[in-house]
Image 1 (cartoon, rainbow, N blue to C red):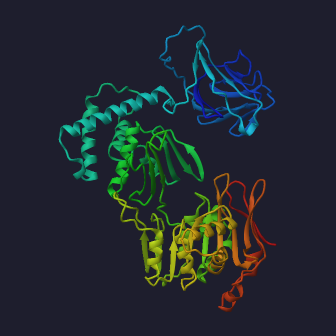
Image 2: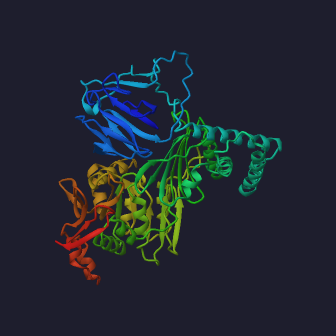
Image 3: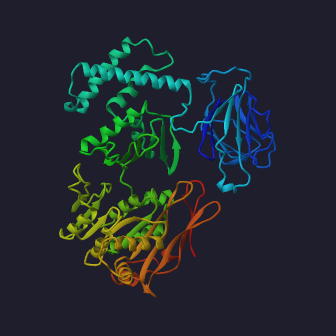
Length: 590
């Protein structure tokens, strides 16, 4: 059995356990942690009927398994997390693994692996750090704990051998392509994949180094994907439940599923393989990435957003982040079913779009702003002319009268950039009924508010902010960057006259995304923009509820006079959510 041990200062080591395996502060423990939070004999790893358990020995601080305090926890599974004092232990493998001895000459006098960690009790708990002289004693030899990012550990020797085979096969493919003097740049993707597949088949037929434990078909597919595709990212991109893919380095890939992050077991074969994938992503769209320009934004053919960063600014190695583009066009009812809002809030937002209210969707990264913007855009009548403006095209509108514009970065000479602000100004000359800006980040906020206030009511945009009040402050800051030299009072008056409602999105700690507030923006009072919340999300210990505050918006009478039949109870509704899935349990008018 192998466990990955991560300390509070970021140091990490891999341990191989033999049972029983004792953890504590005493010198005779297999794993010694010198911390005031650890008992002399804190816990044991034990084996029963072929399964592995963690057994707490009555320590005051206790032993946590996946966030819960346990006396006897298990059976343990791969990726289970155990916290003992200042150490986070992650189960890497439950199989018996033989570790090669370190490449240092020493006399083997002890059979056990002992790790000692010292912790200062004088430092507050939230700021504790390990001393730099922490050490590992392996078979009687003391070696300084390595902190270099090059000292990564693979989960098992089997995975290490598999990666070695993939690297060797990949190199053989490149050599044979080079011998054939093929101009790969002029070949289509289909032709290149077919040729590489044929070469791989011949190599595998003659190869005698691959052990029987490896599936040759899987090895072939892995090498093929890495040589002409996106490598181990291919199956992750096909998985509809995954919303984001994050490559921290070639052997460290995380995904986001249902709002929660998890580490995958898939890895690239090398740093060079990651760079090859990045190059295949950016080359077709005319972008470049190298040491002089080590960051790039791009888009996959399916619309997924890509950000890549390489050395020297990426210290751990090439990093890649992919925000997947949803192939399914979301609907408002789906958000209601997921517990992101209730029926009353959905009905109100539909009315706001129908009656051309200017709205800003605010929220943090990954809170679902773009998804909600997509859904609200579908509420716009089909006979209206819409102009969408985005940094990277993500909106999927099915309106017949639609113009989509996308910003463009500068070329290699630093020229040719088309900014969001340029597109907003140009959109005003295109006779739009509504302008939808994917996200306001800078000076374009001023032009967007000008559009909202000069005959383009019903426009929508998003911005990054953690609350309604933060959104207004952020807008003020962005308008100041427009170099209009306006006094603060004029800026606030401009905002108050342009925006009707702010919809606040929040991602909860469990990964669930909810609309936490819908607030109406009023006028100025003593130089401060007034807001009043119409709907809020109230958190409780085990669940939550969407609550109408019983306040009618200023436009309520206008909607009634226009012949709209509005249920008065919408603004007094209280919808309690189930704790497990976040779906509606009950609704009542308060």
